[in-house]
Amino acid sequence: MASSFNQLKQGRKSDFDKLAKAVEKLNEKQGGGGADTRFWQPGVDQAGNGFAVIRFLPAPAGEDNPFVRVFSHGFKGPGGWFIENCPTTLNEKCPACEENTKLWNSGVDSNKKIVSERKRKLNFISNIYVVRDPSNPSNEGKVFLFKYGKKIYDKINNAMYPEFEDEKAVNPFDMWEGADFKLKIRKVEGYRNYDKSEFDSAAPLLDDDGKLEKIWQSEHSLASFTERKEFKGYEELSARLAKSLGHAAPMTRAIEEEAEEEAPVYRPKAAPAKQEKEAWNSDDEAFTPSDSEDDLPNFFKKLAEE
Image (tube, rainbow, N blue to C red):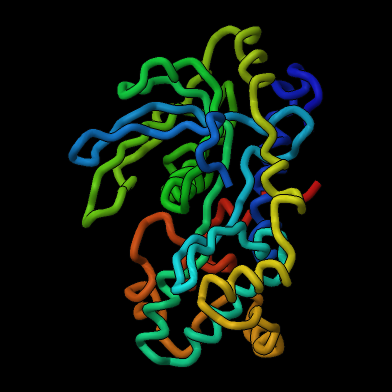
């Protein structure tokens, strides 16, 4: 981790290798924001279209990675809402995921529909510098946190590991040799779509190291989003889940043994991969059974360990 700006600049080559290893480590494991003014939200017009230019920033001072990965649940049951961080983020058991596993493996279509509404959601959080924001120009030149899903993550992965040999690999989090990200939002079939988003050519964020240092020092902590205190314990989550689902008593670990044999999180076995995607891919930000950690692309197969 860099403790001074000079270390950040001089060590960015080795940091690229660390970043790749970190992604790999994340994938080997099982697997926040809200109305927080630290978070930047892209604006869209009445048609659901939007455009902005942002720059992903390196890891904050004293931290190892330029992003964190978090899972969460958000659904309304007969007894009310269940909106909680998912402990699989910390490689711990989650009663909601276990219940989803049980329902999905029942093979009953109506149960699978319920699971699709209760699935855990995958998000990443990074620090960004807003280069251009036509919908809110006052954001330009400022540092924010940005929460994004797998679609944008895939764009980062493709920049670091280009498909063709004539394309140069770029570390999007590098302030000197990274690239601006042109965020292009469309509304497709009722959901936000980021397919047309792309990285620009590699270039320094700014030509003034003094200004770059101030930007780096303005970054927000990312490690705080995966601190244990941000996640409720299993028993408390079970009680909250039972209330949301309208159960008289808290959920128990009745399916714990089954879940351990199959996986700590819901992962369908009976349905072919094609059917899984058709059943689950209801929006481009959702984590689906077919998007398991083992299936994530190279970028997450290659972020970390010292």
